[in-house]
Amino acid sequence: MSFAQHRVPVVVEVGPWARSGGITFIIEPQLVGEHSYLTGTLSVSGHDLKVRIHTLDNKTILAAEPGDEPPDDLVPARRMDALLTLRSPASRPPLPSDLSAALSQAGVELDWVDLRQQAYLLAFLAEARAARIRKARIDLICESLRMARDQEPA
Image (tube, rainbow, N blue to C red; front, side, top):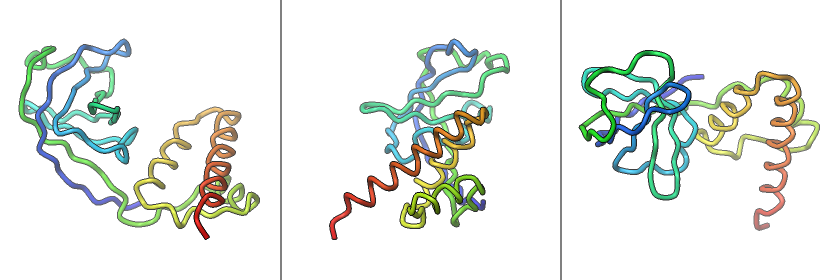
């Protein structure tokens, strides 16, 4: 899948360390929900951190990948300027064969869903490692698309 990148200047407040060992950030301006659960890169204080984006009702939180020791200059409650690089799909991604077969069997299509929403659905599916969970997520995607299609005005 090809992606277009766009950079957003943000102000970050370093949040508390997550239980998983990663650092969190609260950013301004708040992002809209279409970015939620997607990944990006946060460039802050000379560090490039891969982050997962969580958009909530009143704020956007970035959760850095856990593992590395936190840089000394990223201490909780500190505010600083940063640059968030977001990736948006530039073209329709190829569908996994199991999802494609399930969509066909359910009689629903994915091509009316915008590119960002497709990227979200595919990321949601890709995170399912166990076959049982992957099947449940495929079923949920098919049912959600069917319900959305059936509610569209004629």
